[in-house]
Image (cartoon, rainbow, N blue to C red; front, top):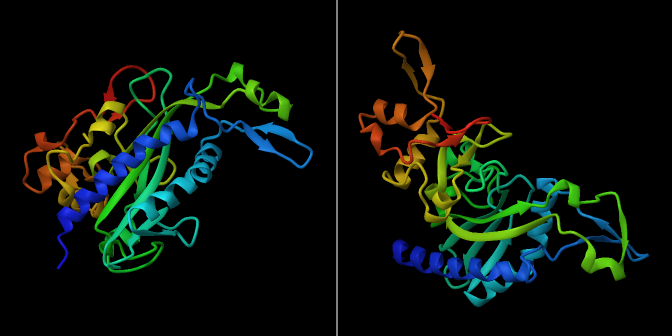
Length: 288
C-alpha cells in the first residue's frame, strides 16, 4: 500500500524546485517576458495582445517543454487534458505505479495597479460534477479521487502600461530587442489548490472556485481554509449554494460564505482565515 503523505511531500518538493527555475526560462535580465510577438513567413513580428487569455495560452506553450523535462526527470508520464475544458491541464502519472497521479493546473494572473500587494486572483477549477462525483470521469482526465493531490502552478505578473504598447505595430526581426514585452516581473509558485482557495466563486463562471487575492497569502498558502484543512475545503465547495439558512430578519438565503457555513456546521466561525477574503471593486478594504 502506497504512503500517500510521503509521496505527496516528495512531489510537492519536486514541484517547488521546478517552479523556482521557470522565471529565468521566460524572462530576461530585466525581468521582461522573452516572448515578443508572433512571426509570419515574411519575418514580420506582430505584438502579442495583453488579453489575459492570450497571455495565459502563450505562457502555457512557452513552458510546455519544461513540463516535459520535469516529468522525465522525476519518473512521471505527462498526460494533457483530452479536451480544452477538462480538468486538469496536466496529469502526472508515475511510470512505476499507475495509482500515483497528481493533477496540476497552470494558472496565471496579474498584479492590480491600485493594490500592488494584491493580484486579480485565480480560478481553481470547477466545484461541479467531477468535484462532487469523485469516482466519475465527466470533464476530467481521471476521476477526482484517483489523484493523490491537486496542485496549482501559478504565475503572477505585472502588465505593461498601455501607453508603452503598440499592439497594431508590425516589427521586423532586427527590431526584436526593442519590442516591449506585454508582461513582466514574474512570480512563480506551486501549491495545493485548497491552500489558496477563497470561499467565493471565481470570475466568469459561478461553478469555479476562486482564490484569495493577497499575494503574500497566496505564496504562503494562507487561504480561507488554512485553519481547517482540505476536508473542510471539500465539504464547503461540494455544498456551495446548496444549503439554506435564515438571516436575522427570518429571510431564507443560500449559504455562500465560509463563516455562515461553519456556523451551520456548529464550528467556530473565527476559523475562517483570513476573514478579509476578497477586495472590493472600488475603494479600500474588503468585502465579506
